[in-house]
Length: 396
Length: 195
Image 1: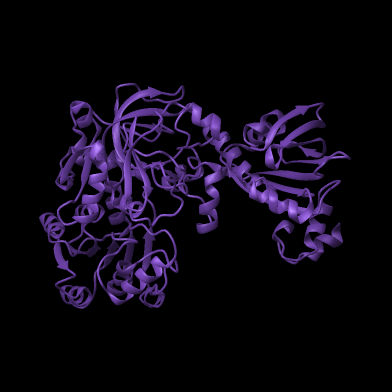
Image 2: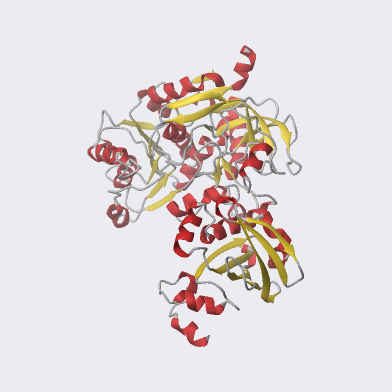
């Protein structure tokens, strides 16, 4: 089959790789109909994530049709499913608490060593996201082997088009969890750093959870425009001083909750950011966390910090003093996708959450390498690229 | 043994002690202990203790999750013959004997005289209520060729500390999910990768 494979920094190619097949009894094979390029795929593309190997198939946001099932799968051939990017077993202690992204049973035992050394514990397996998360082939491919298919994939009712539900695989639950972790109370003002897909879903979610005001921060005018469409006020950090603006807009109190939806590749030329870039390029520090520092400094006393943004390694100049003195609370983590999928599917069906606004480009899977280049270089216009293997099949 | 237990002033397992003499003390707690290097690892398995113990006690099950065990021939309820993969494609074999056993609580073993890699150990099982069963393995062994052998073994990732941890993870996966996680894309890749 054809699949998008990583070969190094800024080098992804369409490779011909082995067709997947059933290995374990709970597996299913999915024929991919839609698969998106995620902002976190750019971290791989930019070479920030360790334990990648040449030839690794990328992609963790995908859906498709069930074409083969193992003896213990409960799926049926022909069903359409959205696949959560976190591989979780559904029967361990963590799954029992709905902490699906903490499930250790989808991560091969040998791959657990790295995370155990780096983080103290293993995490769940992920599709298409380095060997530290299991080395699973991802969904930017014609077919995918999906473990634990009896508990992970969500069956989509007939007649609901892919573009409406594809984002249940990652970014919609991630934005929703980010807002939930902000523990929003009625009347709250919530500030969101980063108007990428996760930030924009966090904006929508925050309003649904009762926020009175949401202030969205970015430097791409088009992305700020999208946030405004959902009722957010905006700050363009290239035009305005973010902290000063936030203080004035909130009467000196600061936002009640802050959400960092930027993560380890924060853009913008700030002094600490430049130092971070130097350190990152010399491996002195792997993450460049300007946004989380600014969010902590701006957050009101006793406020909440929610951090859906992906961080992988170590940071310095973390404002621990401000964090302690102001008595902040931080909630973060990879998304427990399976926990949120059913309710969010209902919210989409009831028209409470808009998902399709995000898609700026639809392309055949074969054009994925060009998609990565565009997504990297034109972040203002390119908000989300959805790859459709079916468009290649039509052409062929 | 009472004196030795008193040497440790805290409640941490002896195998995790920083004191140089702790290994000998830990060895003394394993019946008929053989070896000078001790490792331990623990895992919590979300299954009742009787099920976890029963699966482990049937030694023929062990190669299903212990990567470097080629096979175990059960000779009688107390004695078995172990064939274990060694670095560089070789194998080592020994006879083992159960030295202590208490249903649903613990099982201990030692290698018989003449083993190439003398080893002994104890696996304890503890009912952890709604969390299932805590399995704690303590293994005492004599690494082949002393320190150099250990370094070489580590390069091949057959070093017991790493191996024990991985084996317990697979044990947990097998009992909790009925299968062992693999990134293999298909049966052919799985053959090449193994456990």
